[in-house]
Image (cartoon, rainbow, N blue to C red; front, side, top):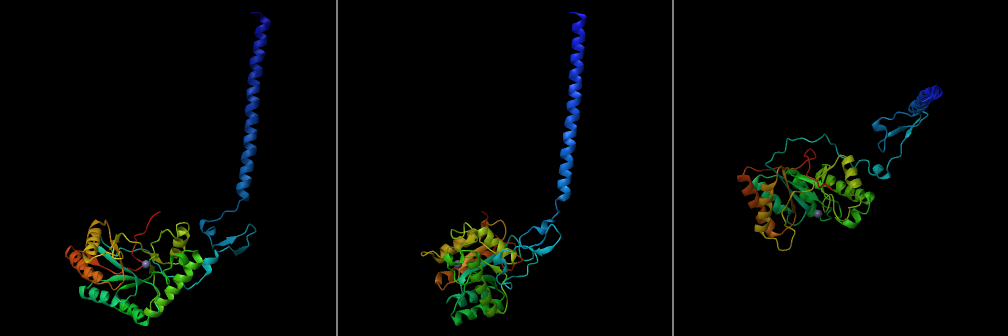
Length: 298
Ligand SMILES: [Zn+2]
Protein backbone atom coordinates (compact mmCIF):
# COMPACT_ATOMS: atom_id res chain seq x y z
CA UNK A 1 0.00 0.00 0.00
CA UNK A 2 1.51 3.38 -1.04
CA UNK A 3 1.75 6.60 1.08
CA UNK A 4 -0.44 8.33 -1.48
CA UNK A 5 -3.21 5.82 -1.12
CA UNK A 6 -3.18 6.15 2.72
CA UNK A 7 -3.74 9.91 2.33
CA UNK A 8 -6.54 9.17 -0.09
CA UNK A 9 -8.34 6.96 2.39
CA UNK A 10 -7.87 9.55 5.16
CA UNK A 11 -9.52 12.18 2.98
CA UNK A 12 -12.28 9.75 2.12
CA UNK A 13 -13.02 9.06 5.82
CA UNK A 14 -12.93 12.79 6.62
CA UNK A 15 -15.31 13.45 3.74
CA UNK A 16 -17.68 10.75 4.99
CA UNK A 17 -17.60 12.16 8.53
CA UNK A 18 -18.23 15.64 7.16
CA UNK A 19 -21.21 14.38 5.18
CA UNK A 20 -22.67 12.63 8.23
CA UNK A 21 -22.34 15.82 10.31
CA UNK A 22 -23.90 17.93 7.57
CA UNK A 23 -26.80 15.49 7.15
CA UNK A 24 -27.46 15.51 10.92
CA UNK A 25 -27.53 19.29 10.99
CA UNK A 26 -29.84 19.39 7.98
CA UNK A 27 -32.16 16.80 9.51
CA UNK A 28 -32.32 18.76 12.77
CA UNK A 29 -33.16 21.94 10.89
CA UNK A 30 -36.02 20.14 9.10
CA UNK A 31 -37.33 18.84 12.45
CA UNK A 32 -37.15 22.31 13.98
CA UNK A 33 -39.14 23.78 11.10
CA UNK A 34 -41.78 21.02 11.37
CA UNK A 35 -42.05 21.51 15.12
CA UNK A 36 -42.51 25.26 14.69
CA UNK A 37 -45.24 24.69 12.13
CA UNK A 38 -47.10 22.21 14.42
CA UNK A 39 -46.89 24.65 17.32
CA UNK A 40 -48.32 27.39 15.13
CA UNK A 41 -51.18 25.09 14.12
CA UNK A 42 -51.92 24.23 17.76
CA UNK A 43 -51.88 27.93 18.69
CA UNK A 44 -54.34 28.75 15.94
CA UNK A 45 -56.74 25.87 16.81
CA UNK A 46 -59.50 26.99 19.12
CA UNK A 47 -59.95 24.92 22.28
CA UNK A 48 -63.52 23.65 22.55
CA UNK A 49 -64.58 22.03 25.80
CA UNK A 50 -66.39 18.69 25.55
CA UNK A 51 -69.77 20.17 26.37
CA UNK A 52 -69.47 22.70 23.56
CA UNK A 53 -69.48 20.08 20.84
CA UNK A 54 -72.49 18.03 21.92
CA UNK A 55 -75.51 18.38 19.69
CA UNK A 56 -77.64 21.28 20.79
CA UNK A 57 -74.87 23.04 22.71
CA UNK A 58 -74.10 26.69 22.31
CA UNK A 59 -71.16 26.97 19.97
CA UNK A 60 -68.36 29.51 19.86
CA UNK A 61 -67.33 30.54 16.38
CA UNK A 62 -63.62 31.22 15.70
CA UNK A 63 -64.24 34.95 15.97
CA UNK A 64 -65.61 34.40 19.47
CA UNK A 65 -69.19 35.10 18.42
CA UNK A 66 -71.68 32.98 20.30
CA UNK A 67 -74.46 31.58 18.17
CA UNK A 68 -77.01 28.83 18.55
CA UNK A 69 -75.57 25.52 17.41
CA UNK A 70 -77.71 23.38 15.13
CA UNK A 71 -80.21 21.43 17.20
CA UNK A 72 -81.81 18.23 15.96
CA UNK A 73 -85.31 19.23 14.92
CA UNK A 74 -87.03 16.52 16.94
CA UNK A 75 -85.36 17.71 20.13
CA UNK A 76 -87.43 20.87 19.80
CA UNK A 77 -90.74 18.97 19.65
CA UNK A 78 -93.01 19.05 22.71
CA UNK A 79 -90.73 20.88 25.15
CA UNK A 80 -92.94 19.88 28.09
CA UNK A 81 -92.57 16.18 27.24
CA UNK A 82 -89.91 15.43 29.82
CA UNK A 83 -89.42 14.08 33.32
CA UNK A 84 -87.23 15.02 36.25
CA UNK A 85 -84.48 12.47 36.68
CA UNK A 86 -82.30 12.60 39.80
CA UNK A 87 -80.21 9.50 39.18
CA UNK A 88 -80.68 5.88 40.13
CA UNK A 89 -81.25 4.81 43.70
CA UNK A 90 -81.20 1.42 45.39
CA UNK A 91 -83.95 2.36 47.84
CA UNK A 92 -86.58 0.21 46.14
CA UNK A 93 -84.30 -2.55 44.96
CA UNK A 94 -82.86 -5.74 46.38
CA UNK A 95 -82.22 -9.21 44.98
CA UNK A 96 -85.65 -10.10 46.32
CA UNK A 97 -87.53 -7.27 44.62
CA UNK A 98 -90.08 -8.19 42.00
CA UNK A 99 -91.52 -5.56 39.68
CA UNK A 100 -94.76 -6.94 38.31
CA UNK A 101 -95.60 -5.04 35.13
CA UNK A 102 -98.81 -5.12 33.08
CA UNK A 103 -98.76 -3.93 29.46
CA UNK A 104 -101.48 -2.83 27.07
CA UNK A 105 -104.12 -1.82 29.63
CA UNK A 106 -106.40 -0.59 30.83
CA UNK A 107 -108.73 -3.48 30.02
CA UNK A 108 -111.97 -5.01 31.18
CA UNK A 109 -109.81 -7.08 33.52
CA UNK A 110 -107.94 -4.21 35.21
CA UNK A 111 -110.35 -3.87 38.13
CA UNK A 112 -110.01 -7.56 38.99
CA UNK A 113 -106.20 -7.36 38.80
CA UNK A 114 -106.23 -4.32 41.08
CA UNK A 115 -108.47 -6.20 43.51
CA UNK A 116 -106.00 -9.08 43.70
CA UNK A 117 -103.01 -6.76 44.17
CA UNK A 118 -104.86 -4.92 46.92
CA UNK A 119 -105.85 -8.12 48.69
CA UNK A 120 -102.26 -9.39 48.58
CA UNK A 121 -100.68 -6.05 49.50
CA UNK A 122 -98.54 -6.08 46.35
CA UNK A 123 -97.59 -3.07 44.23
CA UNK A 124 -97.20 -3.21 40.46
CA UNK A 125 -96.62 -1.05 37.39
CA UNK A 126 -99.05 -0.59 34.52
CA UNK A 127 -97.77 0.43 31.09
CA UNK A 128 -100.76 2.09 29.52
CA UNK A 129 -102.02 2.62 25.99
CA UNK A 130 -104.48 5.35 25.04
CA UNK A 131 -108.07 4.22 25.51
CA UNK A 132 -111.21 6.12 24.60
CA UNK A 133 -113.47 4.09 26.90
CA UNK A 134 -114.12 6.34 29.90
CA UNK A 135 -114.90 3.44 32.21
CA UNK A 136 -111.53 1.89 31.48
CA UNK A 137 -109.73 5.22 31.72
CA UNK A 138 -111.06 5.64 35.24
CA UNK A 139 -108.88 2.69 36.25
CA UNK A 140 -105.77 4.83 35.82
CA UNK A 141 -106.80 6.99 38.75
CA UNK A 142 -107.43 3.92 40.87
CA UNK A 143 -103.95 2.54 40.00
CA UNK A 144 -102.35 5.77 41.17
CA UNK A 145 -104.47 6.03 44.32
CA UNK A 146 -103.59 2.47 45.29
CA UNK A 147 -99.85 3.07 44.99
CA UNK A 148 -99.14 1.47 41.63
CA UNK A 149 -97.00 3.05 38.95
CA UNK A 150 -98.58 4.21 35.72
CA UNK A 151 -96.18 4.37 32.80
CA UNK A 152 -96.40 4.98 29.07
CA UNK A 153 -96.64 2.22 26.49
CA UNK A 154 -97.48 4.42 23.45
CA UNK A 155 -100.94 5.73 22.60
CA UNK A 156 -101.64 3.60 19.55
CA UNK A 157 -99.42 0.52 20.02
CA UNK A 158 -99.11 0.44 16.22
CA UNK A 159 -95.51 -0.59 15.63
CA UNK A 160 -95.32 0.60 12.03
CA UNK A 161 -96.50 4.09 12.99
CA UNK A 162 -94.58 4.52 16.25
CA UNK A 163 -91.27 3.27 14.89
CA UNK A 164 -91.48 4.96 11.48
CA UNK A 165 -89.13 7.69 12.73
CA UNK A 166 -88.33 9.63 15.90
CA UNK A 167 -90.95 12.29 15.16
CA UNK A 168 -93.76 9.73 14.95
CA UNK A 169 -92.47 8.05 18.11
CA UNK A 170 -92.56 11.38 19.96
CA UNK A 171 -95.99 12.28 18.53
CA UNK A 172 -97.46 9.05 19.80
CA UNK A 173 -95.76 8.95 23.19
CA UNK A 174 -96.55 12.61 23.86
CA UNK A 175 -100.22 11.85 23.29
CA UNK A 176 -99.88 8.90 25.67
CA UNK A 177 -98.13 11.16 28.22
CA UNK A 178 -100.93 13.75 28.12
CA UNK A 179 -103.58 11.05 28.44
CA UNK A 180 -102.00 9.58 31.58
CA UNK A 181 -101.38 13.01 33.07
CA UNK A 182 -105.00 14.00 32.49
CA UNK A 183 -106.40 10.79 33.98
CA UNK A 184 -104.13 10.48 37.01
CA UNK A 185 -103.13 14.09 37.67
CA UNK A 186 -99.53 12.89 37.64
CA UNK A 187 -97.06 13.10 34.75
CA UNK A 188 -95.53 9.70 33.96
CA UNK A 189 -91.74 9.30 34.17
CA UNK A 190 -91.38 5.69 33.02
CA UNK A 191 -92.27 3.78 29.90
CA UNK A 192 -92.04 0.54 28.07
CA UNK A 193 -91.51 0.50 24.33
CA UNK A 194 -94.07 -1.67 22.54
CA UNK A 195 -92.19 -4.84 21.61
CA UNK A 196 -89.30 -3.85 23.89
CA UNK A 197 -86.59 -1.27 23.31
CA UNK A 198 -85.01 -3.26 20.46
CA UNK A 199 -87.43 -4.94 18.10
CA UNK A 200 -87.80 -5.77 14.43
CA UNK A 201 -89.56 -2.47 13.73
CA UNK A 202 -86.88 -0.16 15.15
CA UNK A 203 -83.73 -2.19 14.57
CA UNK A 204 -82.20 0.50 12.34
CA UNK A 205 -82.99 3.45 14.61
CA UNK A 206 -83.42 2.28 18.18
CA UNK A 207 -80.20 4.01 19.33
CA UNK A 208 -81.53 7.45 18.43
CA UNK A 209 -84.96 6.63 19.83
CA UNK A 210 -83.80 5.42 23.23
CA UNK A 211 -81.25 8.26 23.40
CA UNK A 212 -83.99 10.84 22.87
CA UNK A 213 -86.26 9.23 25.47
CA UNK A 214 -83.41 9.16 28.02
CA UNK A 215 -82.38 12.74 27.13
CA UNK A 216 -85.86 13.84 28.16
CA UNK A 217 -85.44 12.21 31.59
CA UNK A 218 -87.66 9.17 31.07
CA UNK A 219 -86.48 5.68 31.96
CA UNK A 220 -87.66 2.73 29.90
CA UNK A 221 -87.98 -0.81 31.19
CA UNK A 222 -87.56 -4.04 29.27
CA UNK A 223 -88.14 -7.31 31.12
CA UNK A 224 -86.17 -10.32 32.28
CA UNK A 225 -89.12 -12.60 33.09
CA UNK A 226 -92.04 -13.22 30.76
CA UNK A 227 -95.30 -14.59 32.14
CA UNK A 228 -96.17 -15.97 28.70
CA UNK A 229 -99.78 -14.97 29.36
CA UNK A 230 -100.34 -13.56 25.87
CA UNK A 231 -99.98 -16.89 24.10
CA UNK A 232 -103.24 -18.56 23.09
CA UNK A 233 -102.89 -21.74 25.13
CA UNK A 234 -101.59 -20.12 28.32
CA UNK A 235 -102.98 -21.70 31.47
CA UNK A 236 -102.89 -20.50 35.05
CA UNK A 237 -100.28 -23.16 35.76
CA UNK A 238 -98.08 -22.21 32.77
CA UNK A 239 -98.13 -18.57 33.90
CA UNK A 240 -97.29 -19.51 37.50
CA UNK A 241 -94.40 -21.73 36.34
CA UNK A 242 -93.01 -19.10 33.96
CA UNK A 243 -93.06 -16.35 36.56
CA UNK A 244 -91.97 -18.27 39.67
CA UNK A 245 -89.14 -20.10 37.92
CA UNK A 246 -88.10 -16.95 36.05
CA UNK A 247 -87.95 -14.85 39.21
CA UNK A 248 -85.94 -17.50 41.07
CA UNK A 249 -83.38 -17.46 38.23
CA UNK A 250 -82.87 -13.67 38.33
CA UNK A 251 -79.58 -12.42 39.71
CA UNK A 252 -81.03 -9.09 40.71
CA UNK A 253 -84.48 -7.58 40.74
CA UNK A 254 -87.04 -9.26 38.52
CA UNK A 255 -88.97 -7.28 35.92
CA UNK A 256 -91.91 -9.48 35.00
CA UNK A 257 -94.06 -8.78 31.94
CA UNK A 258 -97.77 -9.60 32.02
CA UNK A 259 -100.51 -8.23 29.78
CA UNK A 260 -103.46 -6.45 31.31
CA UNK A 261 -106.49 -8.42 30.12
CA UNK A 262 -109.61 -10.08 31.39
CA UNK A 263 -108.58 -13.71 30.88
CA UNK A 264 -109.55 -15.72 33.94
CA UNK A 265 -106.24 -17.61 33.89
CA UNK A 266 -104.32 -14.39 34.51
CA UNK A 267 -106.30 -13.55 37.62
CA UNK A 268 -105.93 -17.10 38.93
CA UNK A 269 -102.20 -17.11 38.32
CA UNK A 270 -101.47 -13.67 39.74
CA UNK A 271 -102.71 -14.48 43.25
CA UNK A 272 -100.72 -17.73 43.34
CA UNK A 273 -97.55 -16.09 42.00
CA UNK A 274 -97.67 -13.49 44.77
CA UNK A 275 -98.38 -16.12 47.44
CA UNK A 276 -95.58 -18.46 46.36
CA UNK A 277 -92.93 -15.78 45.97
CA UNK A 278 -93.94 -13.91 49.14
CA UNK A 279 -93.28 -17.08 51.14
CA UNK A 280 -89.76 -17.10 49.65
CA UNK A 281 -89.12 -13.55 50.86
CA UNK A 282 -89.83 -11.66 47.65
CA UNK A 283 -91.42 -8.22 47.80
CA UNK A 284 -93.52 -6.53 45.11
CA UNK A 285 -92.78 -2.89 44.40
CA UNK A 286 -93.98 -0.24 41.95
CA UNK A 287 -91.44 1.28 39.60
CA UNK A 288 -90.35 4.87 39.39
CA UNK A 289 -87.56 6.35 37.30
CA UNK A 290 -85.07 6.02 40.18
CA UNK A 291 -85.00 2.24 39.60
CA UNK A 292 -82.12 1.18 37.41
CA UNK A 293 -83.79 -0.63 34.54
CA UNK A 294 -83.29 -3.95 32.94
CA UNK A 295 -82.75 -3.07 29.29
CA UNK A 296 -81.86 -5.03 26.20
CA UNK A 297 -78.34 -4.59 24.97
CA UNK A 298 -77.53 -4.78 21.29
ZN1 LIG B 1 -97.72 -3.94 24.40
